[in-house]
Image (cartoon, one colour):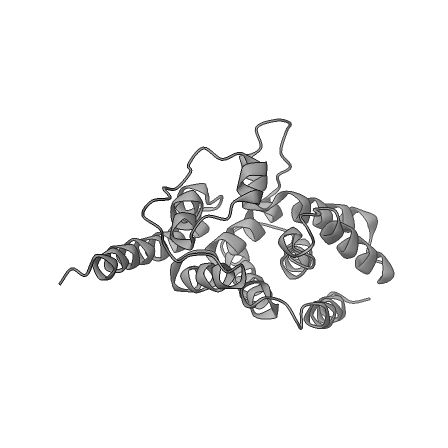
Amino acid sequence: MKTGQLVQHTIEFVKNELQNAEGGHDWFHIERVFNTSKLLLKHEEGNALVVKLAALLHDIADPKFHDGDESIGPKTARNFLESLSVDAKTIEHVVNIIKHMSFKNSLETEGARFTSMEFQIVQDADRLDAIGAIGIARAFNYGGFKNRELHNPNIPPDLSMNKEAYKKSTAPTINHFYEKLLLLKDKMNTQTGKKLAKERHQFMLDYLEQFYKEWDGAE
C-alpha cells in the first residue's frame, strides 16, 4: 500500500474510533497534532511515515477513558497497522512512541525511557496542543467532563506527584496549569517545538494573571 493510501486509511479509522470522544481528545485534537507534526517535520529530521502514523494513532484509546488501562492504545494501533500489512519495524516504532509519549510517563523515575527523533517530534506536537489558547480550552473542557472545580484557593498545586498520584488526581483545573501545562515549555524536545512553545506559554501566564484578577474581584 502506498504511503498516501496508508495515511488516509489511518485517518478514516481514527475518525471513526473517536467520533464520540471527549472534546479535548477527539478527532480535531488528533488533526491538530498531525498538522503540527508535519510542520515540525519541515524543520526537524525524521521518518515522515512513522511521525504521521504515530501522530494519528497516539490517542486512539487514551487510558483516561479506559479505566487507566495503558495497554489498549498500543494494542489497538498495532492490530490496525498489522491489518494493513505495515512492516514490522515501522509498527514497533509507532507503538513505542504511543507507549511512552504521555506526560504522566515522564514522571516515572525507573527504567530507561524510549526515544527517537520521531518520538520527539510527535511528543512536541502533542504538548503544543496542551498549551496556549487551545490548551486552556482543553483543560477546562476536561475539567468540566470530570465535574472538577475551576479553582479552589484552599487546594494548592502538588508539584511532587509521581505517575500514580497524577493519574488519581481530582484537583481543580487551575492546579493543572502548575502541575503540567506550565512545565511543558521546558520539556520540549526539538528546537522548533521550543520556539513555538514560548508564545503559547506566555499566553497562559497572561490568562492566569487575568483569571486571578477576576477571581479576587480586583479592578
